[in-house]
Length: 281
Length: 281
Image 1 (cartoon, each protein chain N blue to C red):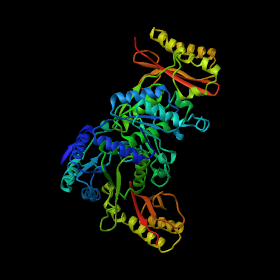
Image 2: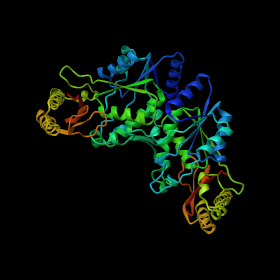
Image 3: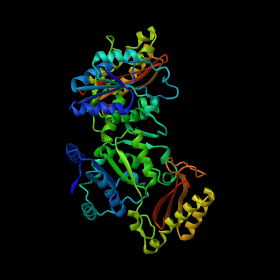
Image 4: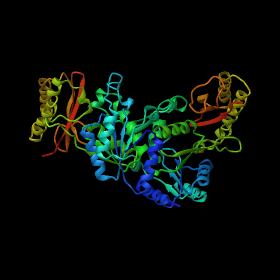
């Protein structure tokens, strides 16, 4: 596995691969890799001859009071995991390679960036949309792989790729979970042992609400009850728990199209998110 | 010359051209073509084996009180001119091809979109940046050609192409003028015979200010005097007349780097813009 740090190097690798008619799969990450990321690499390997994984902790998607400085970094461990997973290239641009002097362009996806995490992380999705646009245009893969764990982000990326006519296929991969149901996340590293015992109840509470709503319970009342359950389980603050249209993320009151239940809640200083599909019965 | 209306058709044409190792030049326009546009086509032909010209009157770059409905359209005349100029493809997507259902992404170039025309046309440059990003990603040319007449637009496009890593070369082409100095513009069609006799004084006044500033006159005072001269010549309203850094478009007080004098002024209901280089002597 090669490690490349410049746009020009990535473009050379991609051009050489295309000259051999090799398809390119791309997995953009912020590092601190866990089995969820490796499942994305595996999905990319299954579909494409060459797999590029980027690690870039993007400063513009963190708010001023968020965890940019503390965000976990483990370059050597990440490189080892990617080598074992069969990635061909680790792409690690630095901040000056991504945001040169005078940088001042941003990409925004209006409707989908409002509500849910967008209400609590006001600069986040503009930062994500901009950096993902850049990475896709730097690498130009045939397909790019994103996890369903960041569900709002996934819908935003699908939208912007369609809207801006970026010629790449977006593939989504289901959330990986610990055996107790906790969704894998780099931020799980922040949890104290006690918080770690509480954390899986986020999944359990969402799962139970999902089953009840599929079973016919009223959406608003059942979501309210799930919030109460989260509080009782020990979540100090609940940013949101909502049921939305699975594609447009618009609020819904009836289960007439595929829906998604999504939540963000805090354990101490760690913000956890999770989401589940609610199929129409 | 072929006329294509779908992204998929353009992509097929470009892929077939690339398979023959042909380079692609692209000239995006809003139609109502004049010799200035044809100079862009000529520049594209000089550098590239295949030339694609788009005509799309982009609704999102017009404000609610602007001239979208009245904007001149002449599909048959435009096609004839492009055929004679040697374009290979006329690309004419309709609004629904460009902005499908649920479209909600926008591209913004912060600093360069503020001031000058940005202060008077608040949605304009976001509309321009978004549609140019889309067109470049639809066509994927080797080079795209823009006129210096829309100088602020040109700087914004250079910036966004660099910032978003769009792999295309942006080529600028000097403004074409009538023999009396009036910059060619589709909007010149709006001018009454009397307004048409006043219009060239915009160029003459900018040219004289340029010469005086190169000759050592103070920038602010000379720009002020040029505004007075525009009023005396018969321009009813002057949106701005300013001297800026030629690349960053930041206001300047001294001629220490290449500068640009830019103005927008109204004759009746027609808004004219023009600009000239001020080289460091």
